Length: 143
Image 1 (cartoon, rainbow, N blue to C red):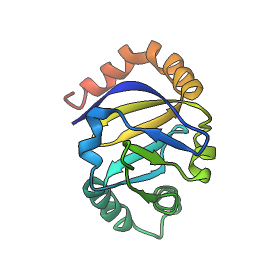
Image 2 (image 1 turned 180 degrees about the horizontal axis):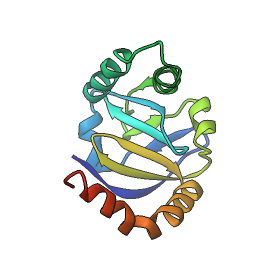
Image 3 (image 1 turned 90 degrees about the vertical axis):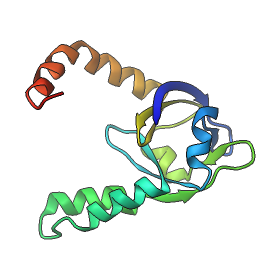
C-alpha cells in the first residue's frame, strides 16, 4: 500500500530517490506517465498493466476517451530503480510537471504522484478548504 507525503530532491541529471518504504513495490520496475493536475503518476508494472488494459478498451469513437488514452499511454515511460533507489525522469515528463529541484512524492494506494513543490502547495491551498463539501458529496456514494 502506497500512502504518505514525502519531500525529495531531483538531481541535475533528472534523478530522484523514491522513499525507502516504496522501493520494494517498484523492485521490478515502474511506469511513469503524465498525470492529472500537472503531476506525474508512477505505477508498479502490474497496476499499470491493469490500467492500460482498461484504457485500450475505451471506445475510440469518443474524442474525450481518445484524448485521455493518449495522455496516459503516449506519455508513459518504463523505468527501473538504480542501486540507490532512484528513478530517472525523461525530460518531457519533468517539463510536463514543472519539476525542477524540489519534488513532493505522494502515495495514493496503488500509485505515486510526483509533484513540483510549488504545484503541490498551490493544489493543497486550493482544495483543502473545500474538503467538507467533498466529503459531503462522497457520502452520497457510500464513502
